[in-house]
Amino acid sequence: MKIRIKGNSIRYRLTQSEVQMLADTGTLTEETCFGPDVTQKLVYTIETKQGSEQLGAEFQNNRITLYIPEQAARNWPGEDRVGFQHHLQVTPETSLFLLLEKDFVCLDDVAEDQSDNYPNPRYEKRD
Figure (cartoon, rainbow, N blue to C red):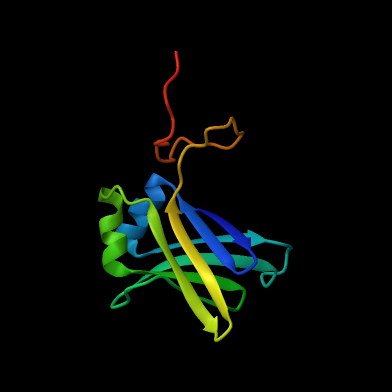
């Protein structure tokens, strides 16, 4: 699971097995440690939420939790749908843009393992 934060925007990208795991278990969690103290870490989670119709999010105790409607998560592995997005109004003047996407193989050469990423629809096999 990858997470990108820029201003009031949070973007999650999931590999094929992560999309399936979210559908099967209803949750995914990863963490980034910043030191030996257990409180020095950022935890990021995706959880399904029954009865919701949009993405949602909260931040508590160094944990970002992104919520996805339960039925949407269950159906997602078998769909061509790339992802979900929502502008969450956090104050009358401010919204938080939430984006949850399938992670595609990069078109550029990169050093990271992309074997579990989705095939890139923009890739054209060249001779």
